[in-house]
Length: 239
Image: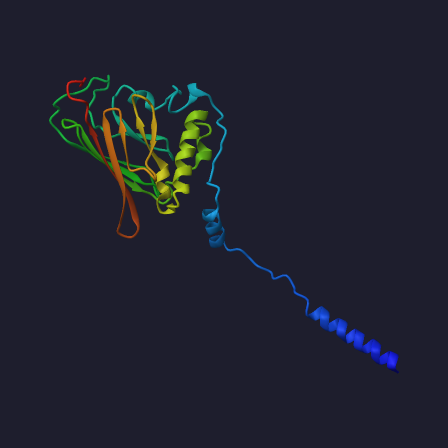
């Protein structure tokens, strides 16, 4: 009888102890928490892609068949590239004829608008060639954010790396409100150099061109980049 009582006591004690064991809690990580973890990580975001073409076929530094930039290379001017459709907008800060000869004292101002389709943005440029001033205004569309994967067949490795770096800078700036700005870049038609319109920059001195820009939000979340570009060569060295 005593042995039976002892066995029952041991059995009850074992069940009680098992019930008191700590069980691992099931947890789930939300997307918001993952995003926060990414931003709190010590490692910056990096993007590494392999180009499929060489420099001769590159949209920027090569001469691909039907390449739009081949026409603009005759002009000493600053342009804006919209990466989604590989379109080029000349800011027309200086006026040229089709042969690349500059027109002096044309006596007019112009407003030009380029729209890129539904859900994409647009560029409205006010230019005064006689004063060598241009004021492009970029309306950022909902889907303007650059997709670098699509550029592997359009850009050589050097140009692809540069555009990927623009995107990395914007992501690592912790300002995802204007990620659509990565869909646009400035280009110097003469040197073929590219310049980002994203954070953390707000302006450049490109040869004799001074460029300043800033972000603006208006209405129901409509986003813009306002630029001011002017040509300011050292006096006595024009031409």
